[in-house]
Length: 527
Image (cartoon, rainbow, N blue to C red; front, top):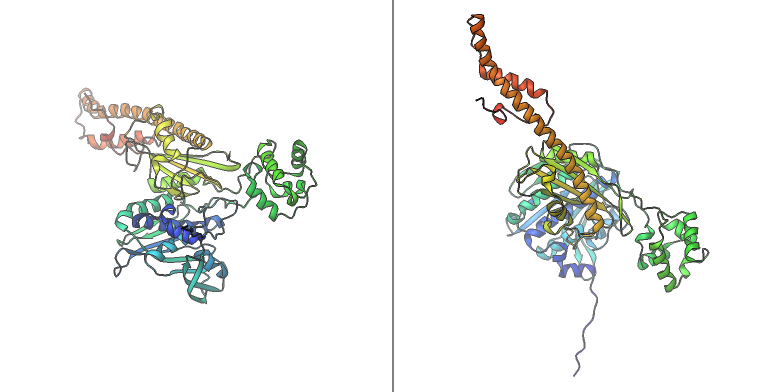
């Protein structure tokens, strides 16, 4: 007796319904954090990626009638979602506006859909999406769920009303099963780090405990929005090449290469074709399988193409990093660097590094590492990340004048269209040599700057100690002089004199020692 296997395909929605753990929804605590993160990322991409200064509101409320149920609402002032796209944008997994070659926070087309799907399977209530595009005459609201089998939206309710105030943006409301007690610290830290990396945003968080966390905009400067770009020849594979050929209008191979790739002009395309013996007039749609394989190999080998452009990336820039670190961490010293673009598998990538020292930063036994990828804070799996390897193993901090515990924070930001995450949770970056090298060079650059600051500070502190020591003798010298001039002087207030002279001397030094608040912090006792 034979037993026949049953075969069927499943939709993307059903796949993630069955495997929600790989998208970061492993348990109620992680799911609550992941939901906030996904919705905030969507909100920020709808604003700063389009040149809009973000105003983001997040509210997390307990449902006291349903145990372990939390209602999350995230509101932004972004470009909004066109009314006819709202159902699919929030009710169809792997449907997204982000499947283009430019830097975005999201990548897989999950985002809000995964939050809605998780809420649907744990609480069962429809999500509510309210949105209006710029200059829209109406505001639209949809209540919807996801048809898991068919991977399409189920519209429960649709409403519209006049947009009398001219508002634009999106509000997403969803109920999920969560655990605020265990998720609290991660959520608060995520919002704090988001404020560091987006100092141009207003962010308000209302927690289930009734706390209101406000991070006010510290600057009106915003990173340049990323532009969509074409693939680079060094980053193409056979399937990508097939897709490009199926969509091109070019009738000749030389025309196809010059028009569909970045870093390729007509002259370079002709030189490439001549070098590898291709027919310049061949119709790309008529290329055989062997021709395609040979073409891909040649495109990857040819070294005369221009390097990939980086205008489709949106690095923060050193100035914004310093503003963010200063505003949130309140250190005594801060510096940052944006490295030049490098290439990873045919895709440009930019590494940025910042350092903050002293001030309100708590001394720890290891550097406090703030990891970001495409402006997203990475909070989990820190010890498996390439940035942790650099700051904990590759760098000898004693060379830069540091001994631990030390009040130091290192910010590492990687931006690119192809970042080698270790998993779908996107919390850890693989140890790719070119990325590791860029992070290490960036950390060493800011560490050298910190070393100069600490060296100058120590020299000035020593000079200040000497000056203070001399100051302490002034009242005794003044009293002794009265013996020679035979006078009866007025009483000298020793503490008042020391204080005024201390302030005078300290004002002559640099910012390195101006954080010293009193004589007790630095003065050497007089023997």
